[in-house]
Image 1: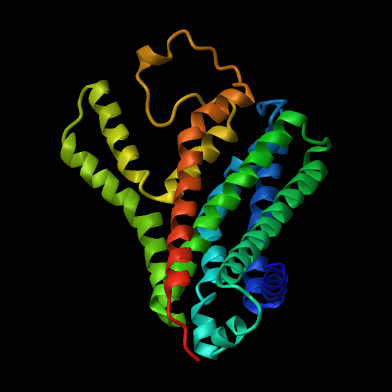
Image 2: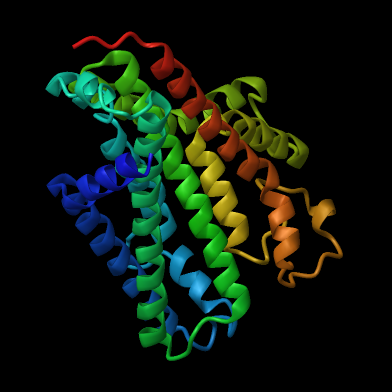
Length: 307
């Protein structure tokens, strides 16, 4: 498996399409962090003294999306780009039967391809995090505290798992469809549906269940229904996890009644408490990645491969 892993990793880092997508993500991300940093420096008196580096990741400035929103939108493209021709490309080139005729097992091939894609995503996300820390030190003049470092590290892990789902999904389409263009189009279509249309459908269904909310309880119920339906999308799970882990003062997901927030001090939560809040979303992300890759693994092990 190590032979397949290093070969695929070298192919990923040397491909032009990866370099182009990497440049787009890094440039837009750095610009978003720079704009947020300039905004924080201008509002230094109103900005909190702690968790400034977390604000660099979540603040919106100059009409730009925050860095987390950029990564939620563009991150799936990295996973799709790495996985849509993982198997179909081998079929198209006629090299799959030649590779398996060597002393390489089928499970070593599929595992090596998936782990190489996951390692590429990890290197990309870690590089973005290091750029944020370095640029943040230049902008604000001091390094992040240990609490911020741990939260940003957990944010990195969540992002890798999130993009890993799209990698596994693209490999699954690549295996079932066996055509590179069809697998790419199917992956992109599902990404657009889950990222853009699922929240709209959730709002429509919630409006049908609670048609005319007048009381605060009905408004909260409508929001809860929309959130529950929206969690079908991995993008919603990622955004909710990031919202809690990068905002220590956040205590609930969605809307809350005024009676539920009375007497609660807006002090930052401990890291362990924030992790408890995102535990359902985090475990669900891991589960869907494992399930998607398991289907891909079983299908590949049972597929008949001819020269």
